[in-house]
Image (cartoon, rainbow, N blue to C red; front, side, top):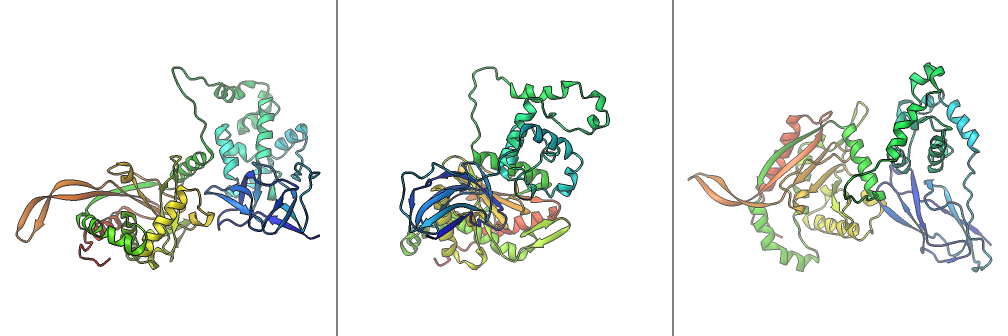
Length: 441
């Protein structure tokens, strides 16, 4: 009987590996074509992996929490077979870890070789490994000294956990510092390990509750810190009179939903204005690669969406410049519903070139958003509030009650200077202000 390999699927251009969260099938279980076999996670979304054949799970090659490179065989399915009660509980073919003394020796021996393996920061670390390193106080320089047993020498979860075990037992120094290398006679002083141990024993006074970050919150935290570290952030502010836009939506929303089968929110109207302005200022729609500016011809707008857990995710409207208002509304609503129901695909969060976040949804008047790397700008819209403002007319100035909204945009000052950033933001505000109240639905 033929055996079919189940492969870790490709989940997006920049995704090189995924973490196994849960196996829904075990060896000996029957499986149908396209039936879910396991759930995996990337630094973007969680996804289900369906079976590519009908038969019986013959072998499972990785365990829960293993980080597996894309394209790797993760299970084998025997076609035409029947489930058997005598099937083994689970087979794991992950390489065995070397003994503790070998690990310790490898850490010391790779001290000189590590810079070559990670020169220029080229060594890849999975989000899982980076999260463990951050939570355990392992610096990047120390992380680079850990020998990896994964693909192309990558540090796996098992590598870093075993390293931590060795370090806590005193078999590996807490930090590989040049000063210690230069003066080996001072190695007998154990004081360098004390700060790490003290942190592990931290106690909190008063009435407190300690909550462990979930996986997505850890990934968001890591992404935000790296963004601030990568891009020098500058934020510009402006305000827009969106009275015409609000009145048009109030007038058109019932007919729009009846005719198109979907609601018209403010988001597609904001996206439409942003797209028009990106066409005028294409440098906003770019990324930076070293000293090269990569201007994106595709306009893919990410929209920050709140999840029921309180976390945020950014699904992407692909080729937003090729969609009319109806198409934008359907894309916005479809992606938002998928995000809230946990149905987003990995590709739904890939390829964004500019991001919109609506802080007004939560009642904020304005915000200073953090850039979604590797983009160079993100625009935030605040809550729409009625305010008395001065209205200029050919007949003179007057004070009127208008619907006003603040806009703010954070941008990467390496690429976008204050002139371009402020000009683009003002252009978006003007586009919203000039919205025609007589526009056809």
